[in-house]
Image (cartoon, rainbow, N blue to C red; front, side, top):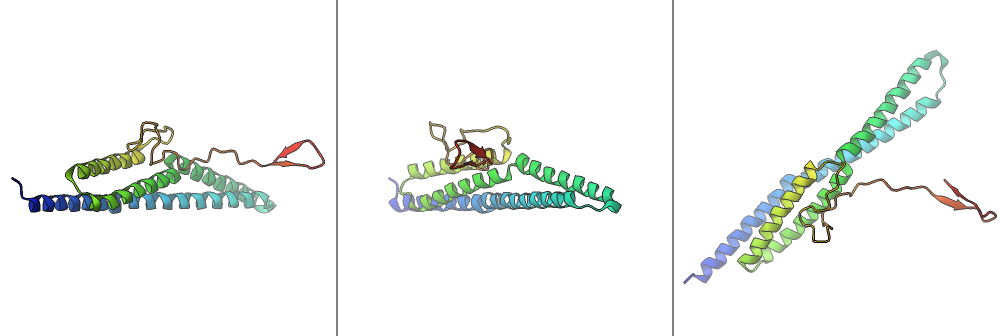
Length: 189
């Protein structure tokens, strides 16, 4: 016959170990990667805007004596703007930052559940959730930006996932349509 105190202490020790593992994953991996990707997103966005602004400014300057220098500046800053936009799209920093935020939320929920577990079977289920989350984080980091994977670990049978796969998409058309009250024609801006 097993001692109930030993069983309770064993469950408590396992819960503590699992919570430590979840906390370590959160602080050493998820939070750090989210911050890095958010920093890159901000940096690349600011660099792209700055290069575009400089290109526009240099494009309207008329200095006949230094025309070649102005043309060189336009070319250089234009190339810089295109390079930063390409880097942002290629590395998917905005999307990854969003996906890491989702993973961080899932981890927070898991951290909340672990101390409240009352039996070994439930603890095993939470341990499996932690392993699935760890795999999902690895998929986020290694995923090809041109391939969508709607079946990340944690997804239910419908293919939806708590960790999104396209958080940073900017593919929507943002044009505006105005209508002149005196005319039947609408004008697209």
